[in-house]
Image (cartoon, rainbow, N blue to C red; front, side):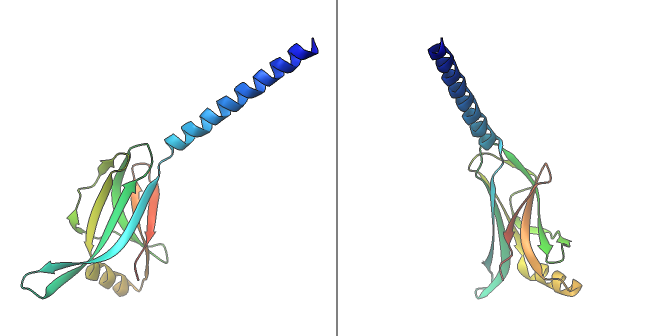
Length: 141
């Protein structure tokens, strides 16, 4: 009788463990994971020898759920948002699947002049999804 009770208890514990493991795996699959990078760049312009400084913001979906990136903004150290016009890149909003990315490029001089004019220092770039989640990367110094 005791042996049957012990076996039943072991089976119940094993099924609980399998169920909990599956729940954790499913929770990881449902989590949105977006990696954002913010890098300076230079775009050559005609005539030769001239170039435009840009800031390139890239958001890559590293999760298994699709993510709709709605906007890219720059945030000052005080929390003030800068929402400049992009000069090139993907149209927003854009739905990105597993492993896909969105790339947006901005005029670096215009962003930095606007921040300096207001007396702010830029802290990071942030990509916002449809649920208002922010995925950020440090602003290059």
